[in-house]
Length: 421
Ligand code: LLP
Image (tube, rainbow, N blue to C red; front, side):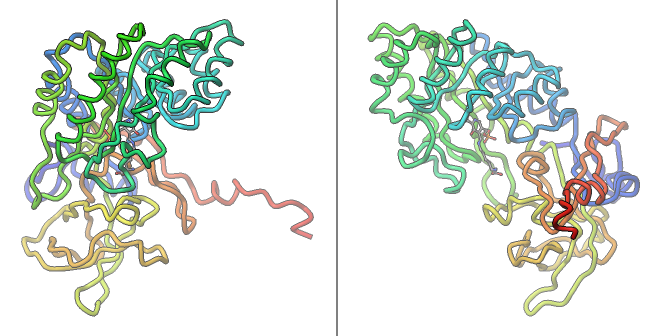
């Protein structure tokens, strides 16, 4: 459920008309709802209420805006970070270091040092060379790094290939069958304190079965590791729960069903459970608001050309992702249309042959469910400035990232004298 609703024929976010934001900030612009964020945190937390002290570490990559992170920090969430930059943004937004976990296959020595200085809760290691490097870095600082190994359970998550992470051919984690060997080696590294096991098999999962299969493997491994004398205190079950994008498809399992499955499968594990939800917290809490530039005739259906493009919302061109497209002031008629951006690539297409509200030049449209992996994946391709972001709460709203002027792009380049001539 979200807080983007029609009031007197105009889409509002909470109590703010979307059109008022477009008038003030221009388009395209990302708009986030505090009430929706708050609701999703509550629903996720309720789903895990039968677990003792779970650590819910928001996957910062899904939406790293400082105001969003600060909202989640106030609600008590931790952070799952994958770079020094994400670590700094999480800390700047008020997320305590003892609720931060660091994932990713390519952590550098510098990033490890930064995380150790801040005293994060856990490093999720993804390879033996990484374990050796972290041990060396920690020793050089007179510390011990708290670690888990991310295991690759070789489970097919049944999602888009580009966001599947738990198959043996993927770059993530250590092979399940080698885990006991890797853990034994890690125990001998003097800069590490081996405390847990981690897993994450993919994103936008619409079926709990592969998740359950992966968690069962984690449970079996914990038992074997304890048998080998390891003191396993944490299990990080990752993120991945899908959200509804296309209202004509069955809705993905609700957090309550996920929580019930987790509670059942992890019964008796005797660890602190950790979670890294991203999309399920922020996905439906954001929309990308855009204006129709013009409508052009097409061979089969009209092309609705909007002022948002693939650089603002990459998901459709990257993963053929489906985002609902709604008129802010629907006229009550629907028709088939293609929705495209102005970028000079055929891939700059948001929807083909879409049955949608009829719109014309100057109308506003919203790309729904754009709060996760939206603004954060934006770029400046075609020299389009980064998309601004707005956060709404009740009847209040604020620009939480301004649209940079085009001068910022121009001045960001420097032209050496020998080029100028
Ligand atoms: N933990 C780890 C280690 C991850 O790699 C990810 C996402 C998450 C947690 C959060 O997953 P979530 O709960 O959001 O599904 N850009 C793609 C999604 C990439 C996901 C990458 N990893 C998209 O727009 O669909």
